[in-house]
Image (tube, protein in one colour):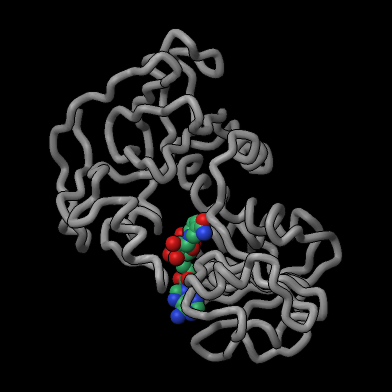
Length: 284
Ligand SMILES: NC(=O)c1ccc[n+]([C@@H]2O[C@H](COP(=O)([O-])OP(=O)(O)OC[C@H]3O[C@@H](n4cnc5c(N)ncnc54)[C@H](OP(=O)(O)O)[C@@H]3O)[C@@H](O)[C@H]2O)c1
């Protein structure tokens, strides 16, 4: 099969399109012929080995010391099931599915092996393959951060930092769906996009510091990185939660139950749950 292969850690030119062995089918696996796959910020991070502070060594141990151990990147695919293992009951040959390969990657290929624990769902009706695939990475992260980790409730006031990105565009919509009032932060050219997704107020970060408002938000979702809990603390009301999608070690450790003046920091890695993927497709 053809695949996009990351030959070393580096820029986009470290990826070549070449031949790779067809994936081997295990008894609980699906093989999906790709119609569309995404290149997302996780692919870019691993390809360039660009990690949040404190995670460099652990990331090299996990993903490869000198070059990606799994050279075919790609965390999500939409395509047609072409082979199924004898133990598979959740999909059949010919089904159109979206699937998450997640941190095992492998989706930037003509044929993608989906393991038994990796989520699979039907794409939303009326969506083409590219649209369905592009929903997965940001949508799964946002669903976990907004609904599960931050526990956004109706009537709360939420700020989404990075509201024009893959995670942020989904976070704005999911927070609105849960009944929150949402403000978004992005650059000038994306202000109309973020407003069209349901944000009440949109802050252009090139003109205004989003941490300038005091005691305003119940929840901050920071999907950009570079700022810590101490930057956002003042914007939170008492009882407020700051969910850092990109957290360094310090905030990761602080997220284990620490409270500062009744305000909490939350961090983690979005899990790959099939029920969440199904819910995301239903919401779409
Ligand atoms: N913890 C997890 O499980 C998890 C899961 C998924 C992703 N992530 C991480 O989350 C981050 C966001 O991912 P993504 O896929 O949404 O990225 P993305 O699509 O590239 O979006 C980046 C966002 O950041 C904004 N931005 C860029 N520079 C900025 C600045 N200087 N100040 C304020 N905002 C700025 C962009 O706004 P404009 O384009 O309008 O400038 C855009 O809204 C990545 O670092 C990714 O690694 C973590």
